[in-house]
Image 1 (tube, rainbow, N blue to C red):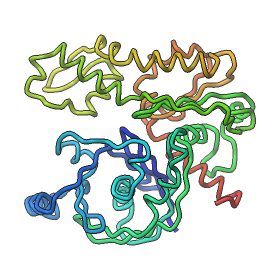
Image 2 (cartoon, one colour; image 1 turned 90 degrees about the horizontal axis):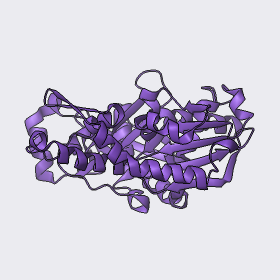
Image 3 (cartoon, rainbow, N blue to C red; image 1 turned 90 degrees about the vertical axis):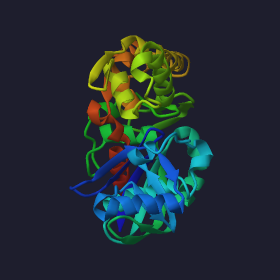
Image 4 (cartoon, rainbow, N blue to C red; image 1 turned 45 degrees about the vertical axis):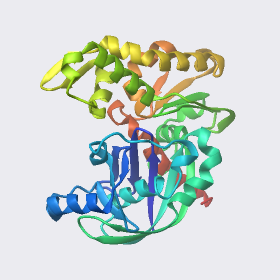
Length: 346
């Protein structure tokens, strides 16, 4: 039976399966319910060859997800318990399965969540378990999710650093012998997890602070618009992927031009960085209590160089290459699944 590791983050939806080709997929967190007339108009105009895989019919209802959904206009993202429903998280899960699997099959799902959403894990599992009939441009398929389980997002990043691909051996033995702090900057939350020697999670220090990269993106767009009125006057929404790149590089590229925006980045990141610095000192006790600090999640990639002075630590480790840091949690999630399989705890 197939296993899919799912990280339905508030910025990007990511998933991974255990095969060599196209084993990972990511697309923007965007979903729109379409009317029957909208769906028919789009499919008729595009034809089978031209229709994006972002358009699909799930249990009879037409949707658009990902980049195509972003182009349909302003999206209202659900958070907390509101997103763990069949018509929201379930649709994202189905959209991933249709990209991975070209035939009907049974699937197990191992899904991540912020530590603050642990109380909603039953809702998460109920949202994906069951039978799904899906129609895309290629074909009609039926997926049966027969089993689901969950893990904390930062734990995925930790396991990606700590374990080998088979999930049964340590690849960084020096980390398991020390005390580590894992920081995961997500879309709406910044999550903290402490790890004791031996890789055991210290649940006395598991925190979710309700601020994330989405706040930075919104503040950046407001600041960039204020400083570039002429450039943006005919652009109702800045492309999210260009905004994320600008936050990382300090340069916004668009319209064939480059706009230096270091000042706008500083303004938009100040609140988040101040909250991280406050939590780091007040809750985590600052640098001296940790042998290693592990950064995971796409938000840490965007803010990496700005985080280092705040952390003031000589052993800051990225859970993955910085350009693929947003995939660290699903990669570690698959390693964790394999460890659980070997221990017969699934």
